[in-house]
Amino acid sequence: MFKEYLRLHEWIKRPYPDATNDVLDPILRDEVGLKKEDSSSHIIGQLVVKIFNVGLQCLKQSPDERTDMKDVVVNLKKINAELIADHAT
Image (cartoon, rainbow, N blue to C red):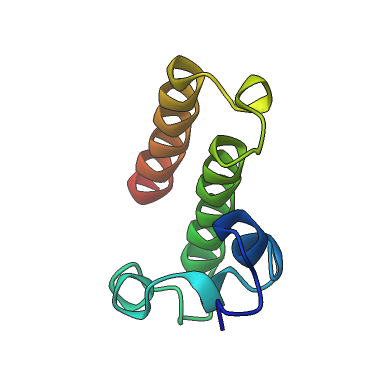
């Protein structure tokens, strides 16, 4: 699986964003309910893609291209707020 790719970001980007379930830990995937076929699972799947995107921004080759950690925190807090809002409905 990982052998074909020399860098973590290459391995993650390969299926991204269509096959995030392939790179997501199966226990975590089951815990958050991504196997379900309901709207809540779809929303959580979209949030997982957003989290992966934040992570991929942190894996850029050049440090100048990487997202600043303050912005990472802001982005993750926004995603968390979306998750809380989804669970409130």
